[in-house]
Image (cartoon, rainbow, N blue to C red; front, side, top):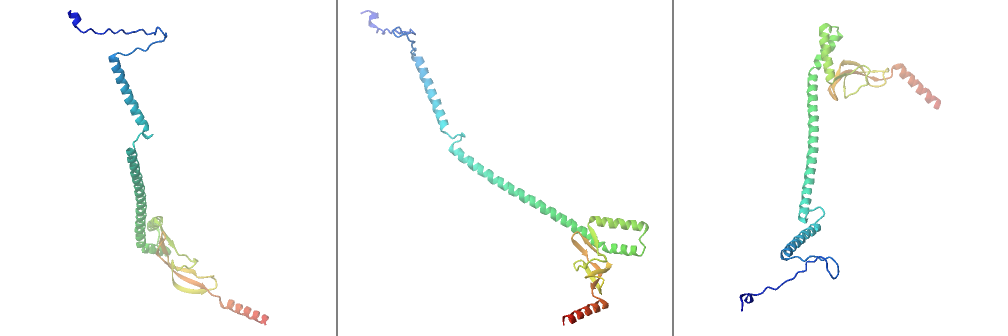
Length: 234
C-alpha cells in the first residue's frame, strides 16, 4: 500500500457560489462560513440583549424612576412642603415681632417726650403769666416763642378756654356759679390751662363752671304762666 493511499483522504466539498440560482433565476443569499456564523451569532446575542434592556426600560414608569425612587421622591417632596410651611410661619412670626418692637419703641419715645413736656408745664405757666402782665418782650419773648413752638411740634397741645362745655375728664372745677345766660355747665373762667400730649392728658384745666338757673323775673313769669293755665283748665 502506497503512502498516499495510507493517508486518509479528505472529502471533496464543492460549493456553489453562484449568486443567481440557475433553476429559479432568483438571487441567492450567501451562506456564511464558520467565522461569519460566529460573528452573526454574536451580533444576534448583542441585539437581543439590547432589545431586552429596551423592553425593560419601557416597562418602567414614564418619569424614568423606579418604584423605590418614586417613594423617595414623595418623601423628599413632603419634607420640602414641611420646611416651606415652617419657613412661612417663622417669617410671619418675625414680621409680627418687628411690628411689636416698633410699636413698643414708638410708645417709649412718646412717653419720654410726654415726661419732658410735663416737667416744662410750670415753665409754660410762668411764661403765660409774664405775657399777661406785659413782661414777655424782647429776646426773652423770642426764646419763649421758640420753646413753645418746639413743644407744640413735638405733640404738646394746650386746652381750656372760656365758653367750652364743661368736661370732667379734662376740666377741674374749683368754682361753681349759676346763671340764666348759659344753657348748661359752661367754663366761664380759666385759672390754669390744661395740656395733653397726643391722647394722654398731662394736666387738666383748672376752671370755674357756671350752670344754668332761671333768674327771679323769669321764674315769676314761668310761675304766672303755669297758674293761668291751671285757672283756664278749671
